[in-house]
Structures are given as structure tokens and as C-alpha cells.
Image (cartoon, rainbow, N blue to C red):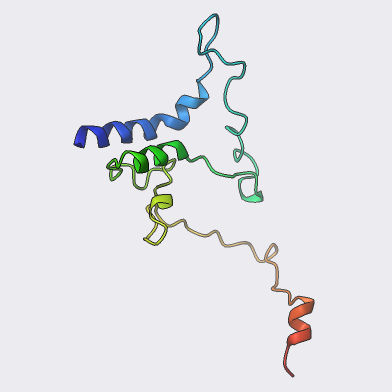
Length: 121
């Protein structure tokens, strides 16, 4: 089983960079008419502005669940969504440091109309 876990980790570790070079040329039966998936570069620019929607290898989570595989070596890898298999457990990814906005960009909390209407005096 340890060999299977190592192979799974190697697959996940190389997954994202390998889909960049997935196109084949010529008469290869696996040839595709695009260089990489359309979403490959999403998030390279405007990462914090909502352009990024995830670069997770969801297919590997399906395989782990379906075949009861050991994914312990994949936990914490950037492209492995192990949290999908552990919805009630702690995250398998390191905590991200939240960036503090400069005071000039900070937005004050605004109270909506409904909150104002229901506010007790």
C-alpha cells in the first residue's frame, strides 16, 4: 500500500504542470486542439479579484474515495483537495496568512437597510 500512496503523491505533485504540456501533435490518437485547459491561467492575474476558482485535481479525490486509497502523502499538497473527504475535520492545508489592507483601501462596515430597520432604539 505504501507504493500506492507514493505513486498517488507523485501524480498529484506533477498534475498541474503536466496539464500545461498535455497537447500532442501530429497524428497521435490523443492529440487535442488546445495547448492547455481554458482555466489553466485563471488566477495568474487578478487572483484576489475573483478570477481564481481553484486548481484542484478533483478526479484524484474521486479515485481515493472509490478505491479506498491511502492519501496521507497527499495531504497539504497545493492541488490536492483532501478537505473534500474530511468535511468535518480540520483542514489538510496550511492556514493562509490574511493580508492586511492599507488604511486607504480599507472599507468601513456598512449597515444595510434591513439592519437599520430592525435595529432597536
